[in-house]
Image (cartoon, rainbow over all chains, first blue to last red; front, side, top):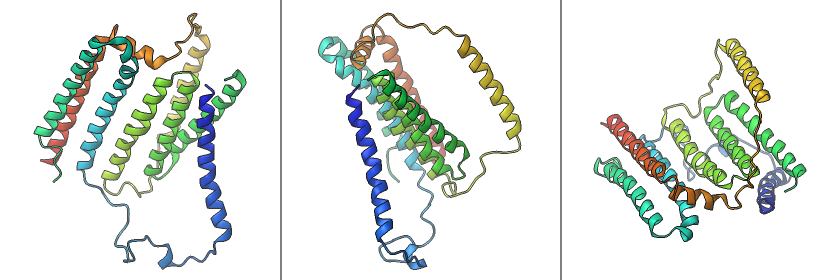
Length: 117
Length: 167
């Protein structure tokens, strides 16, 4: 449990560093905002429209597939940790597991949803 | 970790979880709500670590903080003109909702108070990821393989829905 103390310290130092930097720069910088200065930076060009644009719908299917394979990856962790005690049988089990999901990836690929248009 | 320290950490985590959860349901910008939802889920991962459920904490961080939040943020950003819109999160049913929630709180507090919480006699396994892995490969191998079929069904369903939308 005490190894989590390092994580907690790391977390607080990380948050504190950002807050400290913001505070320090607020102290020493001159405050002189004008419209040209506060607008979004777009390589020195005047920005057109809002930066909140609607993204392409095709991103969503990639997010969905990512979630599914993330769940698959989660199952790999306990398997990998216990693998040393389990041997060939566990390897076959995991191969079946991955193969079933590979079929889904193959299906998605064949249906053309992975293609960027 | 000693009892007192973990109690302090528990209250700290609960504070973060509750405050950010309240922000999730009250903020007017739904994108900011999503960011606070991530903080809430992260706090729950901390609670899991406090309960010595390290594997569950890793699952919480990888699946909920990592993947589900990406899905939610994508859904917000893909919906036109939602990300920067100020919306009201309550409507005229707010009084009814308060009564229903208060009733639900009373019911759950009552059942919590009346439940006898059994403590396990066996000590917790030292390395619970190892234990889960061993159980998954021996006793629970059929549910484990069924999980892959469930994930496959989800994947095919997502592909079918996405194709219908695109075409």
